[in-house]
Image (tube, rainbow, N blue to C red; front, side, top):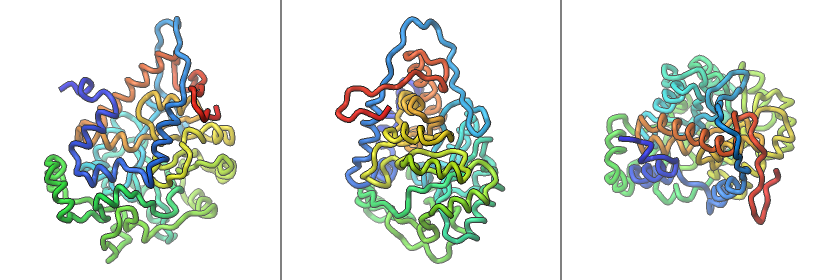
Length: 386
């Protein structure tokens, strides 16, 4: 089967994923929070960023490589963390880690993933990142850092934009709990998704394996948005970030930066990059689009900027790169690919994104991702701050 003819875009993978997943799993993956206005703003704001097409530039030898943390990467994008990836597809973290290692791009494991750092150690490439939801107990904190380092993770990512659980009403309505409990309502949905059900039967329902070591007798079912990880974690402050910087030997990133005024202080602490993100609209429904804040944050710091939220293809990546990002991360898209095509999905998506980058760079006359032409605001009632 020619995957490019059947699934040439992320939207095709998302459509196929929705067909193959039980509804409660699809709602977990695709939903935002509230009325999903932030999720919609991400898409609308990206669509307002355009380029002037280039003509008469002749054939181009396009280079998609970029540099981050002093290393050359073959592509300007990687795999963002997503908690409980194993609920989306059996061995999701393994499939993603192996595909990323083959492609030479970053893979980020979540603290609340369904596999632990030790599980992933045999599958990691040179660009393994560990995303930390901040444990309150300093001893647990130290142990998690040591485990991540010993497993081969080189970059630490602190997610700072989840001080409390979001509501994610679509998830709640679907009947999902944490850990997942197959009620009659959910079993009816599972029956309509045989490929997913068979895979789960073989592997077992997922849980947050990294946390097993620290949790005893605390696994009663909770709402799908306030999982057992919240029993361990805290809302970090500036001192917490400094503590992590002092205890992690290697590049450190903070994820969830949306205020330009935070950037200089984070740079002073010694962070190696800032991750501009509104959590894909999953956390707070009153946030501006991430792409709207990116130029202001770019002006506030000379640190590398990583970007996510709403990215649906190569053109969106170029929009963010032109407005100040140095690197792009995708979360939902890689999980759409997994659910749509199983183990073949991530590699196919990487190729789709690569081809989309090449096509759009050819249209705007860009020979590499570090020297893009200026982006411009397309006609809109609210122009972007370019």
